[in-house]
Length: 548
Image (spheres, rainbow, N blue to C red):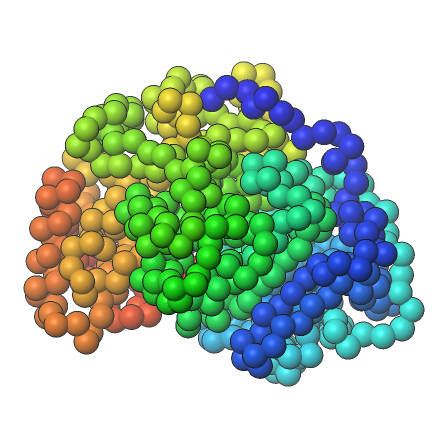
């Protein structure tokens, strides 16, 4: 992939995101707005109000901890969350953005992350304080929105000092805390602002959880960097009523929103609802964090195009926690894709055809280098390999772990490359993500990407829940094979044998692959990551014994 025309300016990297916040400490415009549907209310903090409260949180932290200590943020999707996050950064401490304690599965993961980070100080909100106190007893527990007392000036930080630990969702491995330095935050925000045209007039709107890398950057950091505004709701408020997100997008000006692929499916399923829904001022709708499906793109455009949503506003994108979320995105041309020969792709080459599977391009990078690499050598256009990236937005490693080699690979004499573990190919100058290196399924010498098998299975029968399917490789006395586990809707007019046969037929027809097994489980039976994606590795550990 050619060298990007722009690099992140040095002066951008030298000013932290906290510097950006306090530079606007006298601004009376709204900065953060929480849409609270539980109480049918909106709560807003201006730039001036928010900056003043951040100083108070920083002052409270400085009374119990020293710069460089880890501070866990355990709160819901509310105004106290950005207060806690920016307060920790202003105090010169390392934030650990997490969630408020919830169900047992979340609590187990939360306990593991807290132990891994070694966070002695916890920051929460008045709304979540009771649950947090029941969950555990830290060295110090502070309630961000109840703190009083003198505020503190921000602690000067070096661009390379750690700002926060972004714990990966755990879809392919145990959660690990990517160490995000201060320069990576502003670099990623600069990239996002350039790629998506975010400026002072932009409303960053959405519902992605703040503990997720995309929510943290898109809804908290980017508006502060660009001088804009954020309007957000809790993820559950969207899932329960997807039209709330659509109304949010229609009610605010110059909107930049972001969501995973499944959210666009849910929104299209819900439909516009109101004839007066006007989405013409949605400037950018980012689709990322999971594979972008052509059918989802076209269906969303078909449903909401008549309500003003412009095709060029739809932006398939690619990123990961270790890159502080941003890697590449479609440009002002909007979504585009290509159909590739299935057998050629299985052999590691992208050959365009008229009747092969279609992939959606995730566009081109801004402010960083992206290369396709196989066995240590850069691959030419059209050859599949691992995606490597190099730029100031890359994390410095995983907290407390000795596997920093993934962040310091060397290519053509240049060190500091991040090996993403994702497979991709460049076709006509655009990047296409084809799968995960570790998830690749090999049967009889042929390569299969699990998301392709999952897509076929998800469309096989109405009783199968789309985006609640896991495909993975298995091995037994008959050799290598593939297996599918899928959630199914019990009240659908179908029986297990009928649904199983439909999945077997669909995968055989689409991929010339006979599955070793199909296992149907009730809703909620597939393990998920903290961000709601199906965790393939955990699904394989739970269901991968084909003899069972």
